[in-house]
Image (cartoon, rainbow, N blue to C red):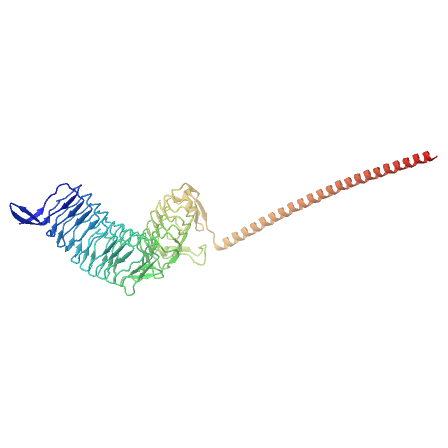
Length: 557
């Protein structure tokens, strides 16, 4: 007969015997039943006998003060949530010879710093060590699977070494392991699952195995210390947001021989280099879209907050939704003449963006005033961009000037939402595109719309456009003439200014001369007055001397 421990008294230390006696018969203790010590708040230390081979589900769950457990060397089975939510548990001596660590076995054991993993272990299931204090994990070669969230939220985990036979990792397996620096992946791993290393902000270097075939969405989300990522040749699928918010990553390289992906300028490309999939967010100052690129994927440059300039490939035809959203240092952008589609929010929250210019397929690129247009515009219907979609340039507070091509036929009401500095739009469409208003900002009424020659009246009458100041471009001869007039006027203005300055200088010189002559006269009068005083004083002395001589002469006589 086999005995199971089904419950225990509320006491701090428990030593369970391997044999119990009942009615003079000996019975071997083989198992700890489900919920046997569940929520035993007094329990601190437990010693299980070597006879126990099975521990049931939630056997010690929610024992808030449990600090140590001595398990038997021949343990074969450990149930789901067996030690879940035991925040004081710090010591486990062995896991015997179990083959599976079941779901949530050590969930939220916040003091558990290490667990000896047996060589018999084959699987670690979902949330098995979720929220534990483990610092280092070395998986035995027998393990083939790690479940979803198996080591998630282990914020002290620094090092993980995977066994050579590991083939499967569950989603979010190491998410929020913010101290994790060193990861050695199995050479048999084929998939990095969804959110696997999300918020592992300490990882700097990560080598992906040659066996890898798929990287799922958000796999490395917010791994903010990774600098470089090399994609192996066998990878044929990469999910959305796989390196989003990796703020230090400045380069991606794809191993030669990959049938789907390639790299150029440190960016991830696909379809023989014709599609730009992702630019790493840590790329600095400026970059150039490779010349082979025809499509820029949705969110391809999103969050590249350090890029100030992006050189565009002339072959680009499609720019996806939010392609440049959050490029907060980007100051200007020139979009190619062959562009057919620009997605919603393409430049959303580009807070430093000042100018955007669409090259015009119907213009002579050597003539910046687009006088060589004529009827050729109609030839391009449907071949180039015709609409500016919702929120395309929204929340760009420094955007001042936008130059739109001749092919534009409509603009969404909120395309320039909260563009507070927008003051000038050049539009080369001969017929006014459909709009309601250009911007919701209070300053929008001060926007000047510059249109093609002889099209001003048409725009002034068109609904939506009639609320703005309409100005016409001039042809080249008129421009040269007007420019010469401006130059002549400026020259005349400068000459008048110079003459005025010279006149002022002359007045100052005359005034100075008058003052000088006046001062000289004053000085002359002062000198004459002093000379007369000196002469008067001399005459007085001579008169006095004569009087003294006369008196001396009288005394002698």
